[in-house]
Amino acid sequence: MIFGGILIASICWALTFGLPLGNFWLKIGLSVFIVSIYSFFFERPKIHFNPKSILWGFLSAFILYLIFLIGDKIAFFIISSSKGQVEKIYLMGIKTNKIFVFLLLLLITGPGEEIFWRGFLQRRLMERFGTMIGFILSTAIYGGVHIFSRNLILILAALVAGAFWGFLYLWKRDLLIQIISHSIWGGIIFVIAPVK
Image (cartoon, rainbow, N blue to C red):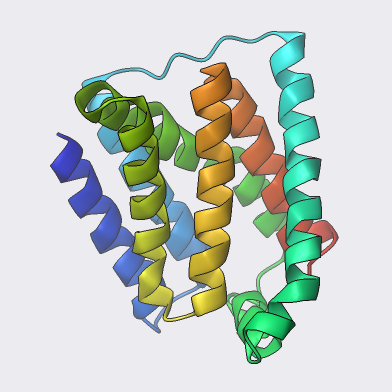
């Protein structure tokens, strides 16, 4: 079931980023929906609502956003083409209504990605290979499926974000934190205050 999840995610991300046809936001929303449904076949995600998780979710979203702000400033000195690559990320689905994108990030892609990537894949990999190996593998796979974008900055961004949320899950074992963090961060970085 782990390999099946990785295979399905790879196919979905390959079609989302590699297929020039269609709206990017609709494709990523559909891809996330498919992988999260896959994980639901094996178990329902364990999400417990409590005020501390909500607070941690918001706080971590803002911390990750600050990490990306700083990363944007230093990326140019490491990768000279970084500005152009960041622009390409924001050009994907540029004509899509911003309210629609925000709601999609908040209600589907943020929750769905965390249910699959951390709640299903990382947890299963940690159970099978041990805590640290499982964390490293899930982070590498999360970054790896973004290779289909052929955008080095996007791949590095996915690795950083995946490691951040993966570490949060490793530390707190509370999926609600990652769901809120991913959803809020996505809304901020793609709609409210893009880093470019």
